[in-house]
Image 1: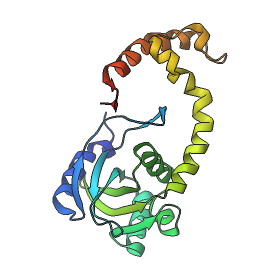
Image 2: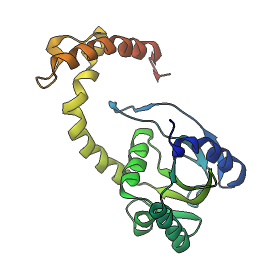
Image 3: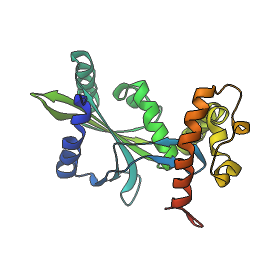
Length: 215
C-alpha cells in the first residue's frame, strides 16, 4: 500500500505549479548521479525554477515534499510557520533552517545540492486534512559551496571504500565484475547478485555515455 505522503506528492506539485508565484517551473526527474563520484546519487521529488532575492533570474533547485501525518509532527510544522511565516528564506546551518526543517531532512536537502551542484533547495511541508494534503510551509534554502564541499569530503570517506570498486574505470570498460574486483568483506551470495546486476548497469552506462558526458 502506498504511503499517504507519497500519494500526496503529485497533488502538492500541482498546487505549487498553480499557486506559488516564486516557483516558475517544476520538472520531475528520476535518479541523478553526481558527476564527480558515480557511486553517489539522489532521486528528488522534483526540480524547480525558483525566484530568489540574491539572483537576477530564477535558479534551479531540488524540491523535497514531506507530508506530516501525526499530531506531533503537524504541531511542530505549524509552530515553525507561526514563528517564521508561510514562505521562509534561510541559509543552510542557520537557526531558522534548524527550526523549520528536521535534522534528517536537512541532510537530505544538502545531499541533493551536492549531487546536482545547485546552490538552493526547496523544502515543502504539508499536512493531511480530510484525506488531502495542504501546504503548511515552504522553505527556500541557500546552500554554500563550503557546506557542500565539507559534506562531500565526509561522504566520500564512507562511500569510496564501500562502493568504489563498482565504479572503477577499468571495471566499467570491461563491462563485467570479476572475483578479483571485490573487497574481502563482500560475501559470496552478494558477489553473485552484483555480478548479475553489473552487466546491465555497465551496459546502460555505455549506452548513455558520450564524449561530452552522459546523455
